[in-house]
Image 1 (tube, helix red, strand yellow):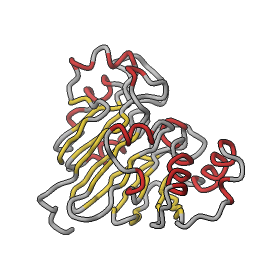
Image 2 (cartoon, rainbow, N blue to C red):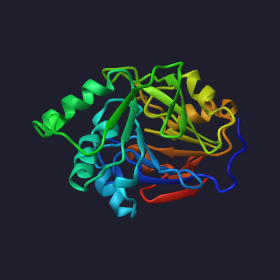
Image 3 (cartoon, rainbow, N blue to C red):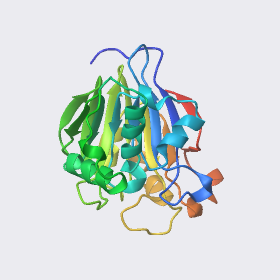
Length: 253
């Protein structure tokens, strides 16, 4: 593996919230700007992503790729808006979309549901869809993606992602119950972005702060930041064992 670029990756939490806007937060939308000249990529694109990006001063038209952890609306539902906005803005550069098996048909269905006929309109840019299968590795828009299966039913296998950009490694749980795959994806990463949906209340198919605390010794990422927090978790976030994200938080990894 090439040595990491010393400039690092700029990570902006444009959206750090849950599906329901707890705490007034936007849905999942994490902007990664690699060092040097490569175009930025997104981790997830919830339905509120366009206003979230614009509030942070980030250009939606400059995004090279969107990596989708799973096919729920708060992680995936912003794609039709992102694509149509790019169309009206005159984008010509291709947009890569990488996510679970079946993401291509689901994207078409979402576009037709929200804006009938929009999936069939000719554009000046290509939307290049890549299916990411658990256990596989793929290269998308200059990023290397390693993929594990999450525990989060969503109509297709949900994914835990590990992206390598410019030699820097960022792991992302998406939404999932605890699984050993989280520790595998986070091993030695420069940053782990982990869901902490609740403090200790059992909620099926979601990570709790209590889960991360009990498995803390297994998580060997250099830095961990918590996101996708419900109102229950937000009330206790100052007591968290890791840093917590908020909309507009910018990190240099």
